[in-house]
Amino acid sequence: MTKKTSCSELAIMGSVPAFTSPLYVGCPNIGDRQAFLARVNDILDRRWLTNNGAYVQELERKLEEHLGVKHCIAMCNATVALEITIRALGMSGEVIVPSFTFVATPHSLQWQQITPVFCDIDPTTHSIDPRRVESLITPRTTGIIGVHLWGKPCAIEPLEEIAQRRNLRLLFDAAHAFGCSHNNRMIGGYGDAEVFSFHATKFFNTFEGGAVTTNDDDLAARIRLMKNFGFAGYDNVIYIGTNGKMSEVSAAMGLTSLEHLDSLIELNHRNYKAYALGLGDLPGVRLVPFNGKNSYNYQYVVLEIDSEVTGIDRDLLLQVLHAENVMARRYFFPGCHKMEPYSSHFPHAGLLLPETEKLVQRVMSLPTGTAVTEEDINKICSLIKCALKNGDKLTNSIRLGKEVPCAS
Ligand SMILES: *Cc1c(COP(=O)(O)O)cnc(C)c1O
Image 1 (cartoon, rainbow, N blue to C red):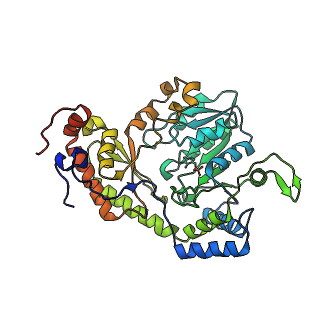
Image 2 (image 1 turned 30 degrees about the vertical axis):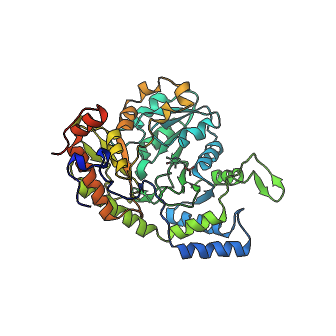
Image 3 (image 1 turned 90 degrees about the vertical axis):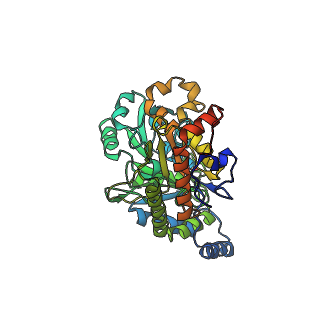
């Protein structure tokens, strides 16, 4: 393909798409197929498919070692892991959470009749703003859930300080942050506990899956009981529980993925740098940065579009990219507080969430991972530049339906 430069060359104006097949955000990373299939064969030979099998145990030990944490409890997914951990921590009444997160975070509270109280974000980090947490604490508040969005640690120390001083539980939704560190300590050991997602679209996947990590022995023991119906031993149920177990085939996928962790991070980092180079300092476009000496997984390449500067808003830019088969996506739109049941419970929540409301209109995420080549990234960057260069024209013709002479 020759580089598209004029507005008439864009697929949204009727031209041929830049990519013949769609490029998705969160296309799963698949490790060494033979290594995975060998493990699956072994599982089938042994006829031990689930219930704390050898592979789940091996994965838990390896993750504890990798994360430098005392306990890792593998789970069927992060949502159930959050629900169980919230319950095992004794949270009740109200818990403070960001609205700018995947809806599983507030749902895991509401599912247990705990009210999520939405807190606004810091617009530079996109994570919960600790300066706004304290004013939301009431006599019913029992905890805070911070989310390490995009794999960037949220304001851990300020949240720890508030939690300690106000006697609140502190849980981190680390669904995005596997393989990331903070102050040279891996994410996984902060707060009372942290919860990872190993869903297919996440950096490290086990098809479906997740894990709770904690350094608290009693908490770990309660979570282990709860995720297995409360069984303390053969025929001995001592607690109310549910089924949160990870299966052996998922653990086999996890162990296989674990062998590629470093090369995956390297590849994602290379992709990220290619995007940073390709998008340069485009006015009105901010690529969410990863700085400092910490490690990141670079699983999310996130842009903020300031339409007042670019002349084209986020949604129209997405339309332009989708027409080219670049399936970039909005994230957490329109914000959890605008989703049910929260929008009915708190119809005016948006008044307390001005930064969240702004960000959900501006943010988009681009394809990365093993399914995307550096050449693809260069093409995507030039498409974005072309769309921005023709921002006003595209806005006039697509949005406002005006006849615009394109060929210029
Ligand atoms: C993906 C995700 C979850 C849910 O993870 P599952 O494993 O799909 O249940 C929770 N929180 C955040 C922030 C997520 O991105």
